[in-house]
Image (cartoon, rainbow, N blue to C red; front, side, top):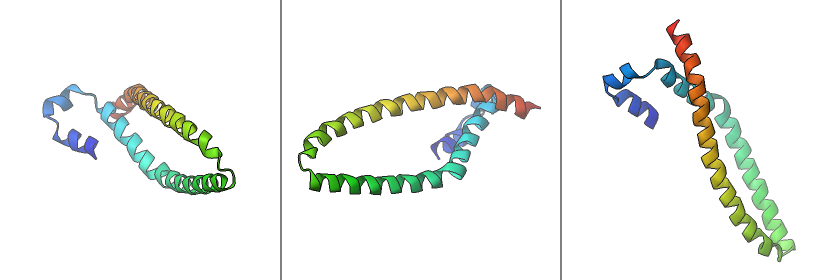
Length: 109
């Protein structure tokens, strides 16, 4: 939403200086993700969360000392997740930049 808002509110000089393929590459990728993968991924996410929480609760009830290992493991998981998110965003940016010339070439034909 913010991307569309900023593209529509950008000054005309910005659009003149930027390639059209760069905008269409970013926008088409976002629309594809929304149309094709978001619903399926959301269902998988909810199922995985419910199953994981149930298993974790069951293990904690059966083996109480497990919590002594689970807390440090959870902290490590959060640290690795933060690192992965930063790396993933950088990779998506690189992918979008590499895809932009192809979209620009196709839109100019």
